[in-house]
Amino acid sequence: MSSRRSVLGLIAGGAAGMWCGLPGLAFAAVPSERRLVVVLLRGGMDGLSAVPAIGDPDFRSARMGLAPDPASVKPLDGMFALHPRLAALAAMYARGELAVLHAVATPYRDRSHFDGQNLLESGAEAPYVRDSGWLNRALAGLSGAGGRSGGIALNTGMPLILRGSASVTSWSPATLPGPDQDTEQRLAQLYARTDPRLADAFSRAAMANGVAARPGPGGRAFSGLMEAAARFLKQADGPRIAVVESGGWDTHVNQAAEAGPLANNLASLDRGIDALRQDLGVLWDRTVVLAVSEFGRTVAQNGTRGTDHGTGGAMFVAGGAVRGGRVIADWPGLKAGQRHEGRDLMPTTDFRSVALGILREHLGLAEQQFANVFPAARPVRPFEGLVHDRSG
Image 1 (cartoon, one colour):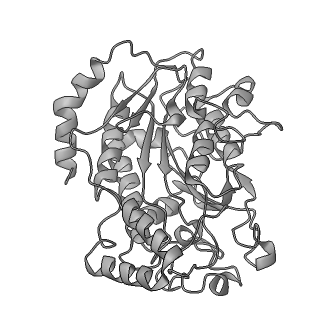
Image 2 (spheres, rainbow, N blue to C red):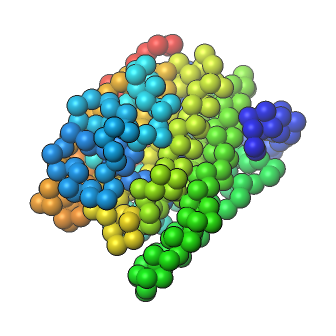
């Protein structure tokens, strides 16, 4: 998947047959021709790097060693900016096609990737209490609305978010992408806990040998998957919902490096969403892209020039159907006393509310389905006004 042409050639040559030949495939219905793409950013994206709060008077001191050069960021308003590698997203923001939400989290308040991702995908209030995903339950709830559509995971397996009673499918390219940076990150974490000098030597050797200089997970593979998603979403009898994953967001080491894993992952995300926009063409006006991670990261830098697992983070809602050009945040502040457990960005917005608002406004999910999609002791209310009606 070294180029757009090769990716689309692969899809045209083999994917159509795979798609039509899937036994027993039946799509849950969606009440319009609108599209939804959910991007799972696995590993814990640092929202304060992706969307720095440059207007917070405590930002630079709180992020010592991690704060970007003010001249390099892409200002959004007087308070927030985008990371320098998010040029395409900045252009979408200027066109009103991107809304940024900050200080967002699921109900999860611990620091395990496995538990956090399980809760993000299941939509429950605690990990491992549901064996189906909130997006599949939403599809099942839309099945009586008329029309024809369904969901596809661009993956070798079916992620939890799409597992459940509604029939969905998955697809992956014949040639899988190479390994991402997770192995290097895990080694760096191990050395950081056991031998700081070895950790420093490992990180410098990795940089020298180009480990951190590789493009994000799988190089251009994420862009290729987004191009494939567009191809499927454009099919007259194809799916209307897609799930795409991006790994390697666990930035414990050398997070602020100019050619490090975070910068390259952000560039990969930027390219991928823009590739989807270009390939969807006029259908972009009927599309919402929701990019979210299982949790944010600590406010302060750790001992290996990275950050550790945190709580509040940032998420992106992009697409021609989005009421964008704004940052939505009930900002909690960055002073030590304003942080969750004294460490993390305090979450003030529930991810489930944002997702539910998109499901209601964009796909027409009925109110009686809300509690099934996001079961909770206290009902989750949908966030309002994220989507506008451009295309009907």
